[in-house]
Length: 92
Image (cartoon, rainbow, N blue to C red; front, side, top):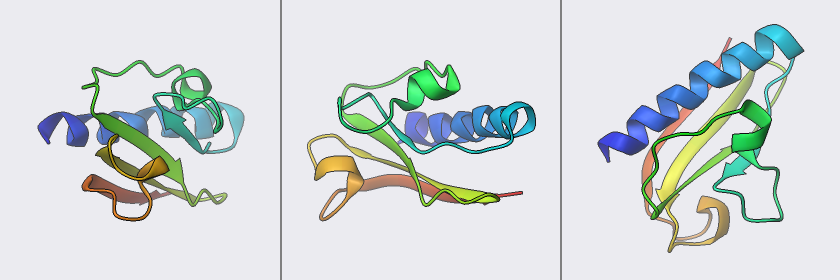
């Protein structure tokens, strides 16, 4: 679970850089599922990752976003009955 917390916090840093230079936060999924935007590519983010953790950024507004880390063997994109490992909502 420590790695999930570390990676969620690093997403926050990459999101703040993007907001500073591009003016927006982004939504996405890591690792890419082929359907949703690839969070790694959008943020140029390449975390240390365990194969059983997925990261989802959603609920993006002009001033905030939510990051969720959950087990990949759970529901798609950390929904439904997914086991949430760490979650945070960040804002300016």
